[in-house]
Image 1 (cartoon, rainbow over the protein chains, first blue to last red):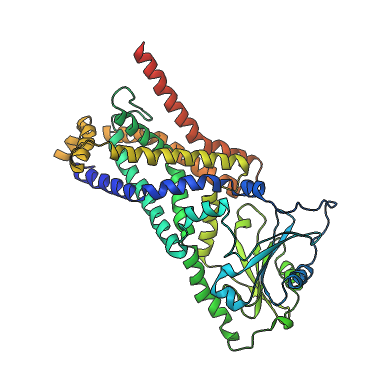
Image 2 (tube, rainbow over the protein chains, first blue to last red):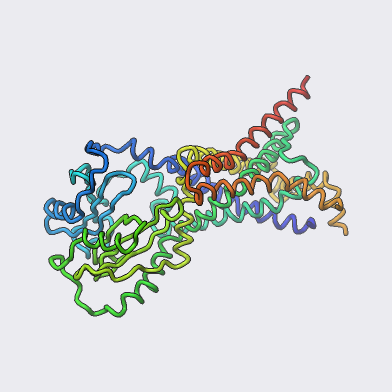
Length: 398
Length: 68
């Protein structure tokens, strides 16, 4: 690598890092509790405990849970019912009306039922009136800075800069390390040199993990536009023949349990995790939309939408997911680290802590440059390495 | 092998080994069926952490030796 090329990559590394560092530190710090989302959520849960019933007690019917919800909130609509496969719970999401819900999803609220006894375990207020939970605050700071889609796109851009910083960091790692053994930490000279060595060592050791978590973070931030794209292309095309048909009224709706059973019969070996009622912006006005998933570690992250006619109760088809939504689904576990038990989460948290040190040491290296103009300080840093690298100078001369 | 090739392999040997182990660890828990694949994933993904401890420990020892 010539000296000019090196300086260019060094510049890319410096500026991509500097722009994203403050946000990346926030992302890493808030990501730490989010790794243990399930554990902390269970621990902070103040709902009633699940009933102790004999093992193998079957779930109550979705129709029963839907009827109970409508009794509790007469006049309201059911948006969806979530059926957990981890815990014996069903969660019914409701809203004052479809118009209110499609205008503002936070007008909705939820009721959590014991899936076996249909006992109400916990209820939320309308989401716009709910006070922020600890994990909700962490998630918002991590994902969108409380700014919705613009915040997601901004944080996604920061994550993209982080990926650029990693790639450029790898490019300049080679020249830096030519005369040094792997993992050398020169602690006996200046603190700046010690932290430079630590920055290089910690960064290169966690390189693949940081690259995967950074890139899947970018992907996750694109989930809103990607789902909107799918909605406006594939889903719209599929519903086009039905356009103009009258939308079923609530009294005409077929049984959600029958829709659930029809989907389960059509997809043996898959688990149905939720039923979205006709009328949701992200569904169909004529169908129950059921989300089915596989049962293996990877396939349990891959969802297939199933459409069941909401008047006749007949299965209308399994919708193919486009490649970009499959990529998004695969990128979720690789970002969250929640697919290999508690030890994997602990390793995830430790690697996150190492990343915080890499970011912090990078910032220190920049802040601790002498009071000379920034360009001179960089030149010094580059020179201090080039000087110990006759090969580099010779190459530059050639 | 020429000098440059030798130096590149010296610089990149450990980072490459750790990157391959990391990718293996990330995929083995995702594609494997629990059990041994989880254990392998934990071991592979913990390897960068072990290498960090080793590097820091060797530095400490080097400093102590230098002081004596």
